[in-house]
Image (cartoon, rainbow, N blue to C red; front, side, top):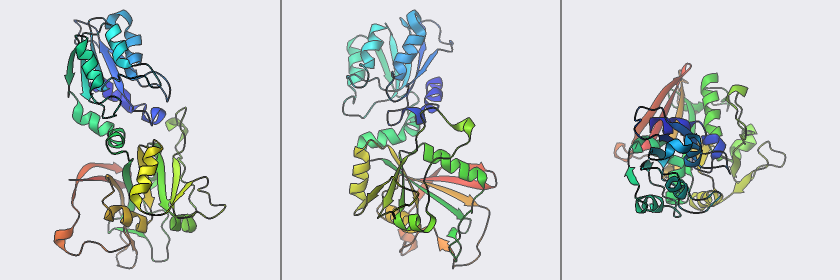
Length: 328
């Protein structure tokens, strides 16, 4: 399963909004065999199981298939993977997580078991749930996973009193933020940010990190973007955030990256709509209370009202620190 998870991680940007899935076929009687590896191929190509089975050929018969997501059982862009697994003569299937998509939802596992295949569910489930979080969230809720990206000094300030903010963090942190953009189906900002900064909201990565098929995320503005703004073409929305997320989810967007500004950050946080907070913290201090904060608006009225989450990841990026938070 470790092999399957590793190969799945390499194709996320090339296959979304399809799930990025990895599969490994281990021939019968060869538990230490490195396995025949496959991953979901592009936005219209075969699923991971089919790629791995093709690589294994006759060695698949009687073998074990490890796959990070339940094999599908319906005709979509491709034929049912469950049927291909049965036809290949696989004796055992190990699935990390079941697919919450209403078209699957356990039916793939049922079909395999009905054909006499031994199916085990749950190996590597913790890692697969993390890896596939945007896809699983979308299928369970109909909405994209909301990631709120914030960059600040260690005393929690995002811009100087005169409005200057570029650059608080260093080059390594900014490059990492572009990787985060590349993994997102949409980037969302407020109209104020568009007017003040005129951002293009594109993905800018070095050539060594670009992949064939990479496309820029959909650009979303809360409010109206001025004519001629670099963010065009973009989607423009007004109104409650919930219906906006519903709309983005209906477009197949699995993850939306909220980049600000402070008023937009406060709106999503206050509404309890943030699934993950990503904070880039620079080793710098404004040293006063007149610089701009992470959020613009009323906060917790007392200590007992504090929002408390859990730190799920930390990493050093040059001189800066990235901290990922999720709700408890």
